[in-house]
Image 1 (spheres, helix red, strand yellow):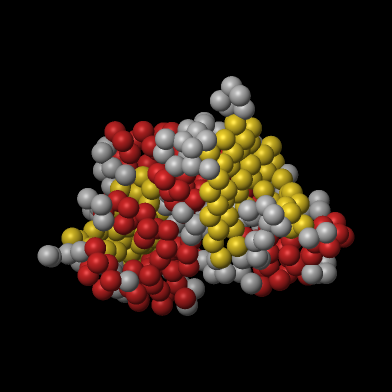
Image 2 (tube, rainbow, N blue to C red; image 1 turned 135 degrees about the vertical axis):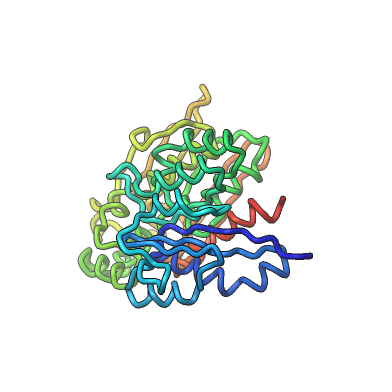
Length: 347
């Protein structure tokens, strides 16, 4: 059977987008053999420019440009410096948008939100690991996708490569979810484990940045905003509970002393930034993010420094725990491939 060609526009070629591009190259033969799919990148954008070619861009060339810290706007013959991602999505004919630009809640989720809106309105499917558009405009985007007969998939927004959303949205259908507990952020666990082993705050932060886990501006992770955004997405998508960031009680890890972390470790307790949604008798949910000491008997009480996880407590399926060990961003990048296959491999 001939492979079905899917023309893709990729916005964002940073940690996730670059790995996703390499993944498309590495998995091309497997995708054709197993799923009869030819995933062709016809447009790509970063913060400095774009490139497009209806015949398909060379994936290795894009990876090489980004590895050398260049812009795709420098792609030979078809690159355009200073052109924007939204312009690319508006102009290029494609079947699907992969939106992997950085999370930017402070600027209204841009450019990701406009790219997603534009693609859905054009009748393009969208997959994205970008939390910003989903947190800020979940219901609008879901409705927009439905009205244009296309799919919106965002499994990578919550817990890296862990299929936490698919588990809750698909595999727990029919259940009442009484409680969600999640440790959805890798870097806070890494830092807390460094403190437990005797590092100072300064050393723990430096090691996290050296390892690539922590951004230059650490507040998104350390102040609990990342975990809060992920909990809001879980609430909307899994619980059908219309949560906003301000509906979540938030406390980060910056107020924790190394001495407290070491004391809890000596008591065989693991401190993690825990995101919790708990169902009340009236059917509403209370939402909170805060550091909590977890005993080893807790389903998430034995997470390693690169592990994150989720626990669903339900009325008919019991309690289900899922954990992933994610020492590199590759599993997070691969969620875009998983979302694409969810759209196309079942058609």
